Amino acid sequence: MAAERGTTSNPDRVRKAAFTSVVVTIAMVAAKAVTALATGSLALLSEAANSALDLGTTVLTFIAVRIASRPPDADHPYGHGKAENLSALGQTLVLVGLAMYIAVHAIIRLQTGRTSVDAAWYAFVVVLMSMVVDGSRSTMLRRIAREERSPALEADAANFRADLLTSTTVLLGLLLVRAGYPSFDAIASLLIAAYVAWMSIRLGRASIDTLMDRAPAGSTARIEQIAASVHGVEEVRRVRVRYVGGEPQTDVTIAISRRVPLERAHDVTEQVERVIAEEEPGADVVVHVEPLADEKLVTQQVEAVALRQPVVAEVHNIGVTSHPEGDHITLHAKFPGTMELEKAHSLAEHLEREIMQEIPGVTRVDTHLEPLVEGTVGQDVTQRHMLLAQWTKALAERQPEVRDCHEVLITETDGGLAIVMHCEAEPHLSVTSVHDASTRIEAATHARWPDIERVTVHFEPFQEV
Image (cartoon, rainbow, N blue to C red; front, side, top):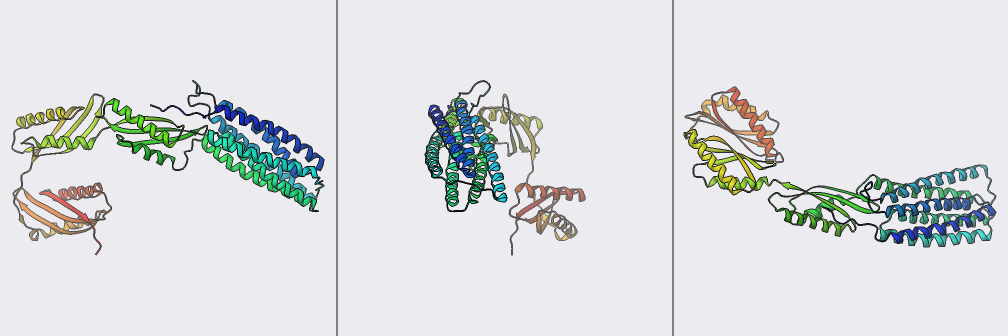
């Protein structure tokens, strides 16, 4: 189930902005190139080369936004939005090449000392005009890029912001050349190369992140929290976020109780789509629903049904498994040990029918019969079996989970000897960990002392004195 896919809100506006940028760039390339050749300024020539490359990348941007505005088709079900990210990456590679070209020639000039530059008045006019044009273009393109969520126009705007700063560097270099410091033209070129390289790295990293479907920091956790807040969502199992053409595409997997009707489940998914779209305007949201087995709820219901049966003393080890035809339940039920199998089986079948009638979706119940052990009266014989008490204490304290075994009590009953030991463990250990330790202690004790009827290990958290 998906929300309606958001596209660039005004593709014509993006295309018009890109086309205007192409026309203006052509004029600036011509002006800078003529002036650079007339003055011999490497910095200005670098600016002309930069603008010429801007022309190519701006044309690439214009083509990219036209491709990106195309609707999804059979070969591109997610649309063509990443054409803009490819354009931005292409601009990055061009800028890196430009930075290397400028740096090499600037270093050669500084090493050879060949810095014949004519800082004519018209060079200043061209640079100042370029700064005004680049500043206005950068502001316009950046505003449109943010409003229309266009990464290609954002890259173009970044390019012109770089041009604005490099033009400032050129202007300062020309002023110093005019003041009698000709080497500053090459130094200005070197500064331009460093700045262009830095901008290229930033732009390229953003483009690569998008092409690699890297989710923005914190977006996955934020969307998971939003989806979990919707009433009816029992669990959010997976969230995936990626951006195509500046627009988020979100896949969310949620769990809903299997007992919720299909129509209600559909309403829940639509609500999830709405709240995510409100947080991420224009998002393409796909919500996948998985049924929740509700094991805890089923366990409680089985126990409630069993307690109504007068002969069933206890049920435990309740398991719920999902099958195409419905839920299967397994359980252990205790009956009096002296009861005949035929009667116990009949009572178990009655319990199974009651469970299937009362709990929707349950198609099969299997019961494991266990005897109910009656309470016995015993006598404390710990002092008479001190060797056994010491052995079991040492056994317990050899377990990695046991910090201390501070009491061992041995009782003699009609059925044999029963051992109760109190052990301490670290408070942070799980119940599963201490139960595993108990099982090992019981098994080792029965193996060494086969006549022992029962071993009970009581765990409590270790307390620092």
